[in-house]
Amino acid sequence: MTPEHLPPVIAIDGPTASGKGTVAAGVAAVLGFHYLDSGALYRVVGLAALRAGVRLDDGAALAGLARRIAPAFVEGKIVQDGEDITLPIRAEDASRAASQCAVFPAVRQALLERQRAFRQPPGLVADGRDMGSVVFPDALLKVYLTAGVGERAQRRHKQLIEKGIPATIDGLLRDLKERDARDSGRADAPLAVAPGALVLDTTGMSIIDAIGAVVAAFRQRS
Ligand code: CDP
Image (cartoon, rainbow, N blue to C red; front, side, top):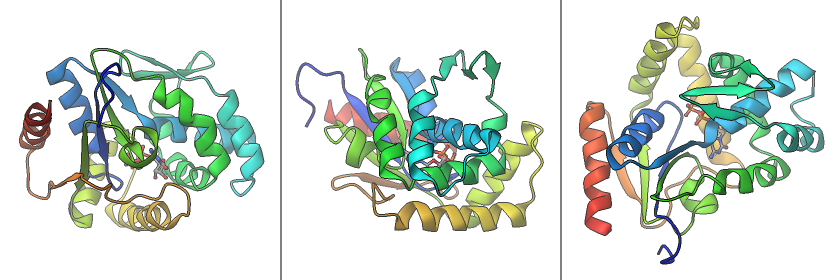
């Protein structure tokens, strides 16, 4: 339950390329809520590690990076140290690095308060892996968004090609499966269905219908 004095949160968790980001941003637009793309923070850490040559198995060094980064979210863009890194963080090497950084509890801890600071009136829609379980356990609505792995690879492929980022379906399928296994198998804040979450399988479902289902569930609870 959400304490009375805190703005309501809709937590949307799920595996990679399940449509969380698009659905979460759409729900936020419909309700006039703020939006947190928590994966972007892990991606910023991953990209920073690749660029600085920090080893992806050095949890302490990665946590240091996570404490230092200060990305600004401006009009749909992500800016770090004056550089627009909206596209570089979406490349597959940064995606893989993000998931490797995310296994370390010290990295997750370093990003925790930064994520909670997005909770501002009139409300927040947050998407990620542990929004309902760890970051906002009192979320008014928890959603677990998923879709078949083949459809997820197709969706991600379309998204990347539209942004001019090269990708192949085979490579993406391999990467999705690898990241799903790492995100679900890690000891700290693994991807899982939070108790009480609404499970929404969007295989074959349109974005508009998925947004509508989440908004309807929220209105029913609030
Ligand atoms: O867009 P996609 O679902 O592929 O990934 P993302 O949400 O941008 O997250 C990138 C990576 O960050 C994931 O593979 C996770 O390992 C990690 N992550 C996490 O551990 N916890 C979150 N709340 C969000 C992302």
